[in-house]
Image (tube, rainbow, N blue to C red; front, top):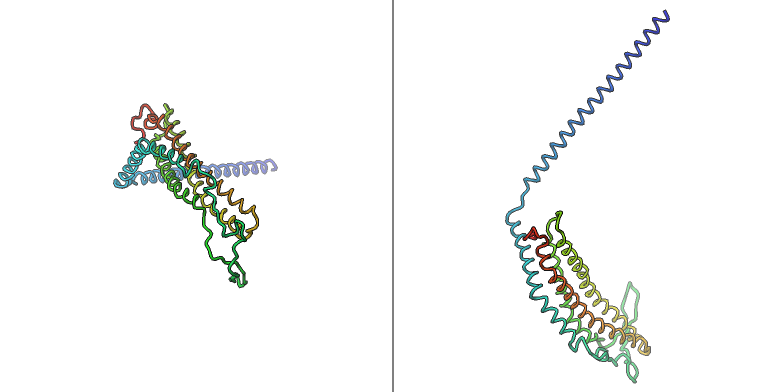
Length: 293
């Protein structure tokens, strides 16, 4: 009796085990089938996306305009390098040797203004105290009857050098785009010309930050000088303020004289590098005669 009961329990255990195994196998099969279906769906979606991308086409007019723009940049840049750049180097060289930027007495760039207290006589008196309101608070300030002028000699130098700075920025932008358009697509093989292109491009990119720096320093000069003039006006008996203003104008004159030479040197360096490697720039790989088109 006990033996029969034990056999029945064993058979029930085996039956339960088999049922559990069949359930797990069924679930795994369903998961595999579901995964296959999902994979097919993803493949179909990818194919549809690829097909839709292939269907997108640029308008012929837009493509032609971009091509014409690219060709115009290349033509302008080559003409600039061959014709305009040497003339610009000579012009800057001659400008740096003129009396405005070279061999000028420092006393010629100093503002001699006796109206704020310079000279032997007493400083000019302020006219009156004039009240004005800031946040409902009455403030008293001195008003004078004259305009304190800028340094005329320095301003004339700025008038000459500012257009040169703007032209430098435009010329560097043109040369940068020219080099970029001539770089061929990435391929294995003869890349010596491509390396030269990237080296000259790096030189242009290092120079292209200079125009913005030069322009910002012009504004910084006037801001700093205005504070110095205010100190001289407020403290006419303090000679150090007056001497600091003189030294500042002298320093600015020397910097502007040097800046013309720096711009000339940047042009000369780029011209030399481009002319020495013109063949490699236009034909970076021997197998691609028109690799930049």
